[in-house]
Image (tube, rainbow, N blue to C red; front, side, top):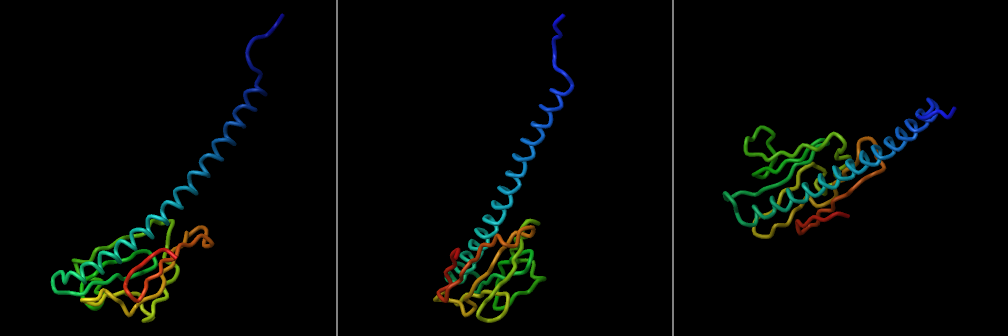
Length: 152
């Protein structure tokens, strides 16, 4: 007499294959999200640098502007020096998957401030972002003497 249906072994094999495929797909999406996080953080920091330079060049509020870098964030600020308690600061927190691992600026500090009339900076150099769970994955921004920034 023929039996219809599936055996328990066949069902377990199909479930195992489905779990393996699901794990492969999910791990791919995690890597995609992390790469997206670091690219967005780098793009945002370049935007902050461009905004600070543009505000300085346009003499917005008759002030100089700059960008301050920390491990977990960067900040657009007005004035010659960064003041953490200034309510007008524009903060950008990095996602937990990304950190600023190094900033090698000419001044030795963590601030890039632009000069009025020229948009140049004495704090030229590089800022390096990396993934927190894979430090080998890095993106570096290079800030030139002219104040222009680009991905290195």
